[in-house]
Image (tube, rainbow, N blue to C red; front, side, top):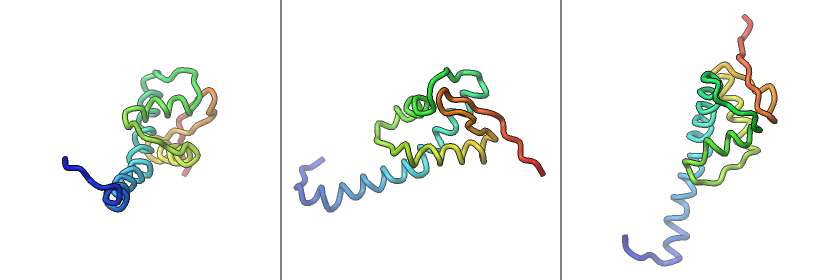
Length: 102
């Protein structure tokens, strides 16, 4: 990789990385965290930790910052829609199967 100026970094590369980070935080990470929780729940692998601890464990692989206040509602939505699970308690985390009544 060649050297770049501070101006090039600020005007070209930083917006690119910010876009990737936004995409991760808006789409990839919430879906992965929901899968992580649903998979752990179905396999009885979730410990008595707060929801935030489980989320931090799931997102460790991404090595990026996440806004928990935005991430948690999105994860709860995905758990309900995609995995039929609702968060009954956040600390310690308690999930429950959700069955929609017709």
